[in-house]
Length: 110
View 1: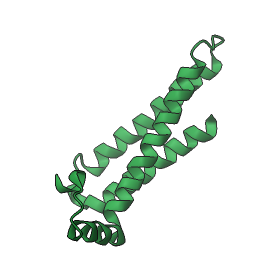
View 2 (view 1 turned 180 degrees about the vertical axis):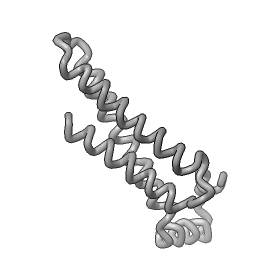
View 3 (view 1 turned 45 degrees about the horizontal axis):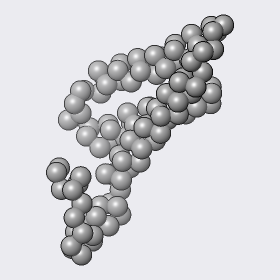
View 4 (view 1 turned 120 degrees about the vertical axis):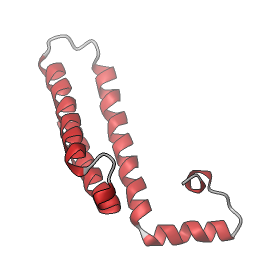
């Protein structure tokens, strides 16, 4: 489970970097505030894990594992989303799909 938390921590930092690359000075919240928020999030995950790891009561083991797995999946999906927004090849694919008449509701809302 430690490796999953290392993965979550890495994904959060990668997302921070990709967001800065995408938005630059126009990040909302600004990079300094966002870095504090992301580091706090990483610390919360580790504190909860260490609290659970050192407690003698393992009654909520399945729930803790599920939360960590869902967080890993969420941050992985967010990273893929940011890469797709930055990648010109993906943007060309989306415009190709639009030309063919395929509606992409999530991207049209932007």
